[in-house]
Image 1: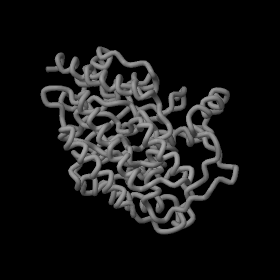
Image 2: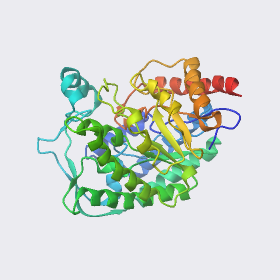
Image 3: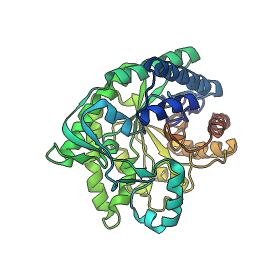
Length: 389
């Protein structure tokens, strides 16, 4: 889609789950019994409500809020693949917002406090590849597609998207006991994920590929490695994703990267200028990039020297998920206008930096603030449109 006559609006996908859905998912996560029909009904009603709310406030391209994902934005798909085995924690695998990076060591006291507030503290176990990887999540995926399309029809939404995980972000940190090497594992994951990608496209929906680990891995490589070491790691990940996207209509695919959704220092983030060429190699029609948070907002200037290909659009984050401060619509408009004047007004769609919930149990802002931010997004796009058109 392109912005014809006005700046269109969307977001990155993940929205705060309603309490009744979270309660059921917590029970499931703890090994408790949940009536399947009650869960399906609760999920269907929650998707209908969240889509209706998005349309009501003026979001042009909504999502299902990722409500069908029982665990995180990336690990959800492990429940939809053969070949992985979950191994309970041994006491050595400690959870945390970020792994042991230079930033974490620099701000150790902060992270020790922060982890306790985010729902990640404690041992989390491991997913290990023990056999050939094949996709088997067709029923769950079809359920999500059906719920979303029914909600879109009821709300009068003409377009919508579903977020999925990228091969690089699923493969990151997975132990491999079956394939000859990690690259073979990566491409096997890409081949399996292609089934999910194709089904979403075939259903008439847009596909968003989430790849937070693509830039985040920089912090695990550098230091002691170099930018060149990171880029050598990154190139096969781009190739694997393009293999998964092969043959799909590029204009129906958008690629989202972020530097992690946590509201922390982010001093070790890789600069956008050092990876933008890799991002643009991904076979997607749109790129959803963080452009609102204080660590990356200045990077809008990358488009002064980097040409966005003519057949692509930019979905800049002009609203931050990482603060409870609600952006002023005039600031949103300024962010959109300066980008539109660089890449063209038709090729800018207003979006958010990242999801407002990393999963069902970890939310970044209160839901009332989430909706206020999305309302500011819509109003800011309206103000920008009056200037640009």
